[in-house]
Length: 413
Ligand SMILES: NC(=O)c1ccc[n+]([C@@H]2O[C@H](COP(=O)([O-])OP(=O)(O)OC[C@H]3O[C@@H](n4cnc5c(N)ncnc54)[C@H](O)[C@@H]3O)[C@@H](O)[C@H]2O)c1
Image (cartoon, rainbow, N blue to C red; front, side, top):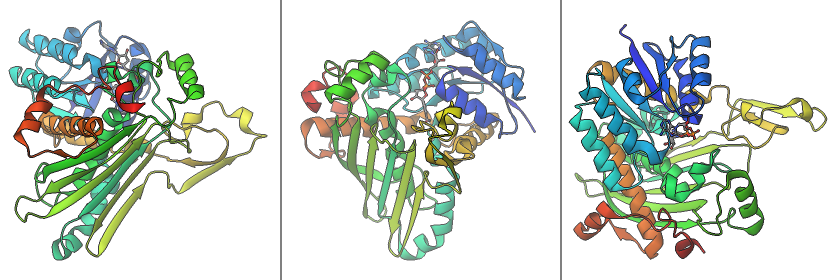
């Protein structure tokens, strides 16, 4: 089996999650990391876990010279500069087989187009990392229901949600850096997975045509004086001045171009979900059949009493974004596999070794960015946005949501 040598740019939350997922992936090694912080720790982890002889490199150019594919696992606001440096490295002779970008591809359509142009300039196959589409639970649901779908008709309503108590680093909370609030950060997941499950079995990922979107954004918890102060103290971000939404919801209508049938995706995301930890919820409803995924249902529960709680130092041992270390806890024994990271890495490795784009490429990532931005536009205007309207499509090309401009108070308060 051929091996793909991976280099990571960024060694924070997702760098560590992906490295842990790599323990379950064959034919891929982590050989290098470049990051402003925490690179040494990630390299040590890689070596200790047999992921590869991982070295810390001082810049993007050196990293690219020493790996086959490079992953951008750094914050949203440094995407363009990092991808520019990757392209420079390729021009200087680095022989890369592909380039990976985590969700969201970009904060605006203009940024997304720039990233795609850069990858094309360097003739690099791309992978857009949207792990939820790769979840075994989702793939299994669609396989199980394929015969029912063929005889009864496609899924007509998809519901998707990703919710937790709020992100782990200050830059996520700052809408001018991140690109918005929870709609930009997690709406991209839920919109993608809902569009995917609605797509009739065997059709391409962008087969269904987006027709319209109606969305709302709101600040339900972190704008209240008490929690705003906590956020300021903990993250240094002041939602009295530069707020972002901690809740969003919306409905997207898609059209089947062959049959004309309209189907709907209903998404909800929040940073104010104070239950055990991260919850993913996905549902699909077709005529006479349905599926449901709830990531907080696990065969494993543990109970830790108040008396024993002092012994528990790490709440996140149970779940991503876990909020409690006592009581009845849901534990997912293999979150990396559950959330789709393992299958996402497998798909990327096969594609790049074959000289192709991954199942989800950057052009697909840009389609998701457009839908997220149209969601912000709908929330700002308090009306349904017609995605088939040429004037709207043109407007989205240069649109920057008010929240991302730091003017969230005009929309949220
Ligand atoms: N798929 C998912 O569910 C998921 C989960 C978390 C994060 N993400 C995405 O991954 C990306 C990174 O998020 P994170 O949570 O790991 O962030 P993080 O803040 O935890 O870590 C960011 C890493 O990037 C490094 N970095 C920052 N600026 C850099 C620069 N200019 N050059 C090199 N390194 C730089 C930091 O030093 C750090 O190592 C984001 O785009 C985020 O949306 C995806």
